[in-house]
Length: 117
Image (cartoon, rainbow, N blue to C red; front, top):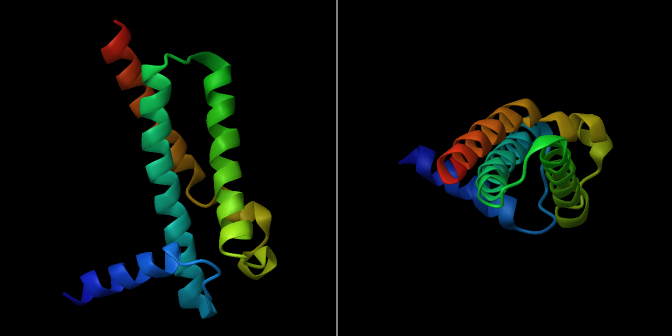
């Protein structure tokens, strides 16, 4: 029950505009939010690219640009955080990037193969 309350509190903070993410625990929570934001985005974009059908370097490039752009806008415009307090822009943009890229590729390939072959 405590884990559910903690999880709900975290998502309330994530969806609230300009939330305070103080201390080491706040940083870890914020990085968790970025990680799961990327996972959801990867699932959505993988399904979309597979259904459209989009393929090749254009699909990969668009995914990386959209993924990085949304995370950056979420961090700076929606949450209004000081990126230097979290290790800089690069640190924010690389959090969860490779796992989300792997998920995107799997979903994209499976969707594309299932629908178009």
